[in-house]
Amino acid sequence: MSIARFWRATPQRYNLGASKCAVCRQVYFPPRAVCPNCTHHRESIGKMQPIQLTGDGEVISYTVVHDAAEGFEMQVPYVLALVRTPEGPVLTGQIVDVTPSEVSIGLAVRATFRKLREEGKAGVIHYGYKFTPREPGAPGRTSPPG
Amino acid sequence: MREVAVLGIGMTRFGELWDRSFREIGIEAGLEALVDAKLSSKDLSALYLGSMASGPLLDQEHIAPLILDYAGLAGRHLPAIRIEGGGASGSLALHQGYLAVASGQYDYVVVGGAEKLTDVPDTTGNQIASASADQEWEVVFGATLPALWALIARRHMHQYGTTPEQLARVAVHAHAMGAKNPLAHYRNPLTVAQVLAASRVAEPLGMFDCAPLSDGAAAVVLGPLSEAKRHTEIPIRIAASSVATDTMAVQHRQDPTVLESTRVAAETAFRTAHLSPSDVQVAEIHDGYTISALLALEDLGFVEKGRAGPAVERGEFTGQGRLMMNPSGGLKAQGRPFGAVGVAQVVEIVRQLRGQAGERQVPGARIGLTHDVGGTGATSVVHLLERREP
Image 1 (cartoon, rainbow over the protein chains, first blue to last red):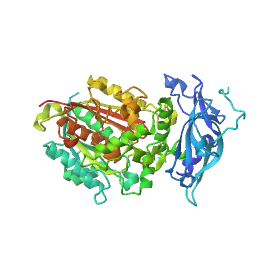
Image 2 (cartoon, one colour):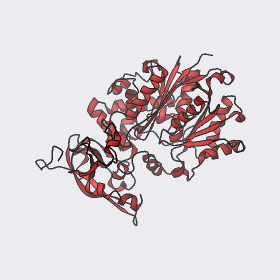
Image 3 (cartoon, rainbow over the protein chains, first blue to last red):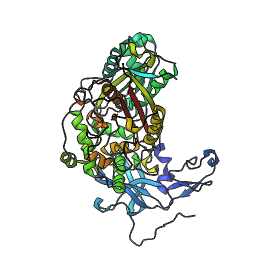
Image 4 (tube, rainbow over the protein chains, first blue to last red):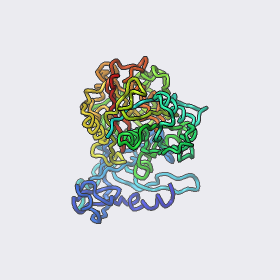
């Protein structure tokens, strides 16, 4: 993946920048130019507002990957999950700092900033979000902010 | 719109065809289909060719005129168009060929599908397969195509109690049928225990839950149904050709256990053809992963949502019920040369409806269905085919 192709998604991958439709209040990650939820999509053009996700979430499905994606070969076995955020969007990401057998559907997690992969010795290093289990009792939002 | 018939079929063996090139397998399938349709190449109007990844696999794009050229037809200067839609490229090409004949623009067209996956190492082939998922919001975070289907499988297990044994039955059935198919990539039988003991790819899916990377090509000749008697003893009418789409990424689906594209394509196809799922005797469905087949059976309307696992366990779609699933061996055993898959599904259904499927013939099959999926379901294509009595 070229430098520009990765760099231009920095606001989303580093800071969980999402968008919210001013018409129906639905939140999207990654940000959308038009709202898929509004029946008349044109109403939402120019009304998608930036919003940042809190990074909290809950595992709704997961897999333990043994046959790695390109650039992830050194990390096997790793856990990949679908994480539902309290704001609404579902994100695909790794669950780390955990033994795979401790992951289950319903696990509370929090986004963390990590190195994803590097493109060889001289290539770009990709950074972005992964998730770690949330400490029991740690503060976590249970309802969407705002 | 005119009625459209399949007049001829052709297909290479699927598998690791080390000694054969992309263009060789492409023209073999196409010429076989032309001969089968008793058609001279001077009657041809156009070629539609489905291929997912000839560029990344072979550094060769612009493949539709290439195939026509090596079929000896460069001098006819025919329109030749390549179609891409991930693993559903072949059946998308068929949809375009169908529309061209139905509209009256072209009389006779060849629809082909071809892919050469073993000219690159396995790991490269798998990376290229992952390009039919969302590179920027799935793959970059460590997802592969099997990992995304594994997320769907785990959720299906959670919501409906589907078991690894039920998933394994899909692969066992595929190999049992592949053993009866001389063109299949895999002709060895498998047991549930072998599927469960295989090395893990992305849990809960193991090596034998996943279809292989294969080489292969398939082709059909389409023409107006009104002219079909001149070309074939048993015309097979295309009763419906339906394409539907959905979100690119699994994460954006309301319910990851539903392939909405499949549901909509099937509904449209059955409505167009004035048929219902209970009219179908034989179906070639997408079993790229064992879980894919369960979702297909549900979303095509053959069984209620969440009930495909127990139904497959009872043998309902594998010989005991009124519908036979994947008599060819499916993607799992017949093989998965991406762009060729959708066309090969139609080749098998035509063989079945003509009564020419040999050992794996479904007795008295009159109506058949094909179901092709790109990626994790951003594209689904459904065709309904009907035997016209001579």
